Image (cartoon, rainbow, N blue to C red; front, side, top):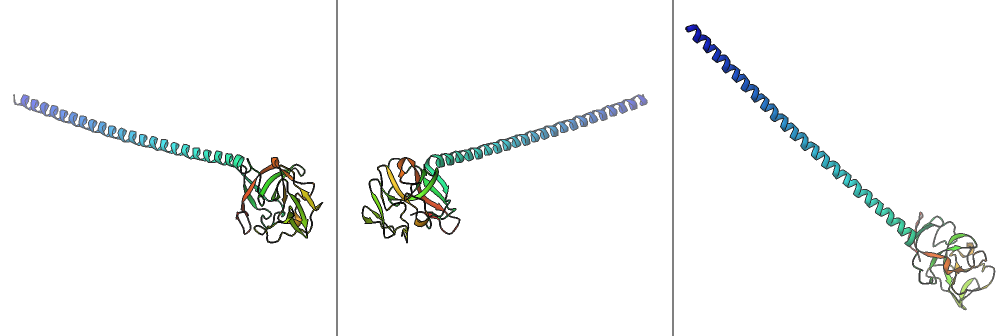
Length: 229
């Protein structure tokens, strides 16, 4: 009887120990499951944050490239239809425009009107088959003459002190008198004795249809830049 009770106690203890072990296993499994769930949640949160960061970066790149594209299109439209840029190839407009200076001009300023005297214009020469830059001296219907090395317009000496310190012309050109036809202008280079301009037949007077724009700003690699006179 005593042995039976002793065996029963041992069985009960073993069963209790087994239940404790099972409970510990269940607890450990629950803890592991909870840890896994926490890890999965953290990993999912990290993936979500990473995906949000990637979307944010893609959006940033799209905005940047859109801005670049808009700027490029705006520049193309501006310099194709509104502004024009060019490089001075010779010394014919010195000292106002030096050789290798860069100029910025307006394409639209003469859309509905002719240039004014003193303007520096950009035009295409049919005879020379090139784009040139000169100063407007004579307007339609005026008579340009050269007397004593000076320029006269309709018999009156032209005052060019606003843009030239010395405008003496020692070589008047192929003739002493020029009548400017309607719709045309008479142009000279500021460097009067080293300029191919309206005094010579290979350039001649400039038709209004060949005027491309007006120079208004100079970017110089030397020591001068700004608005041109």
